Length: 229
Length: 229
Image 1: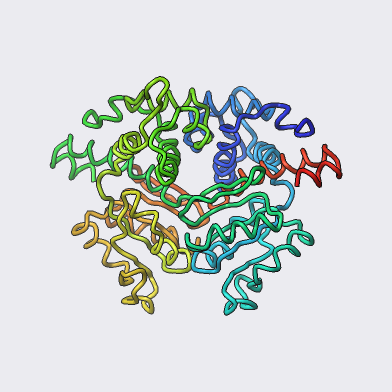
Image 2: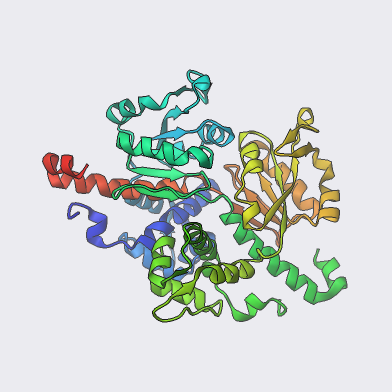
């Protein structure tokens, strides 16, 4: 563990969990041609308070310049490097239903440091079919993918019923990081990281704001509500 | 705004953004039959520090019991109520490509307080086709959906090129919360909330841990590496 610069500098897990959010906000600023942002602007775009943001970024040795803020491109690079995204991570997607199809075609992975190197499915009828420029492979090619492509991250996009079986096969082949889109809890041995994606998380945040708007609108009464609309 | 209990109690936006994560962790505990958790356990499952978790939950008036912790079901209910999830939010999904198909069939929405009431697409060829038990409708039925179903939340699952056009139509019909899966930035008037989903966020967190494992493994050398594997 001593060889890990992040662990040495002690970046808290909670900070790590927020770094992708900062990177997403910075990418948004860059897309709109904005080259520098204040900590307040970046904090607002990331949904945190600016004091928290400044503390998080100080763990990366990034402090911004008073009156100028942070340079968008440079900070995005620093965060990318910290997250290990300046190298190219080979990813395999397992489960070629609608979600697997959508993920295979998702352009956001490539621009974020991930390369989809393989698509797999347990269904023999799909093997050899081309999706987003890649052939669907059988599960028994996993060992070769780990050995030849350095595959380290597996994405599970199967139904809940087959997710644990697929997970076990990924782990047996040596894949040590798993992103689970299936709506179920996976059991893995120590040393394997699993993250579960819940597509309703963002909807829940919207619902909170929607509720707030509805209550404010009700308080203003029907006339003002019509105007506010 | 004075009618809004959350605003009165002043729940910070950053806390709101973490509530879905706590709810997800609590659902995970409940699925495994666990009825009470300590703040440390819940914090670890949510990726925050326990002091932060306790402070966040204190905004909800929830303090846990020393030596016992939090009751899983009750805390999940309190968070759901705060997020406005104890009522049923009608949701429409626009764009019936692979991602739209996957979202239409996603069982996680229904269990989180969201009801998919309509599927829409600009492509006439799809109209009337049944997906996950609902017919695909044309965009000009949006006004009726807002009036009759109380539709308040729209999910955009179109390609980037048509996302702004679809967003404008949702806003014109009176939809005031938008969840954007298209890889682009949307422009909306004041009073409309937009959240952008980046499917690579969780992959980025995995990449960080994967990098840490790779560096630790390299430091231990080839022999120990073999053992650690």
